[in-house]
Length: 223
Image (cartoon, rainbow, N blue to C red):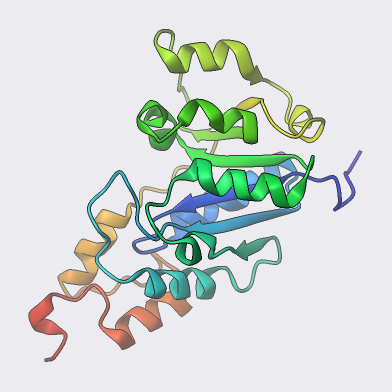
């Protein structure tokens, strides 16, 4: 039975998006389809705590995301981490969203790399008290069998996506997503070398990046 928009889970898809590409978009789309999410919020990190500073400004990355998701009605842009300032800790963002949405089911949407790094996140043990956690993984993946993530899996894993709509938070759901062999690092290399990123990212974003010289080598931006 489909859920009404007032009850349907709301997804959170955060990241540096440096830059956003088709792999991000396909993964977010599959979260929406697989979990029957009413909407997926794209939440660009202003000051990501687990990586070097992004190559372009937070405002530029925000505008690239805005252009990338413009034609998908289930995608929306959330700029709260830019407005809030400071380090972009997911636990703070989820706390704000929980306060705004009451008992509505919230789903933190993660790729496998992010999930495996959860124990290094700020106050990571609180995440599952604020939202469900959904993880898109590669076919053949086996969850950890020891350590803190194994404990999380044992206590909270669900095999039924409907469980995520039945309560506000607390479940862990895995599914095998389509793996597009794209990474933001590789895409930055393409742009820095002067090659064309056509078909690796939305055309609107490609045009914006080429027009502004974002990600070009410093000496090439004035040439």
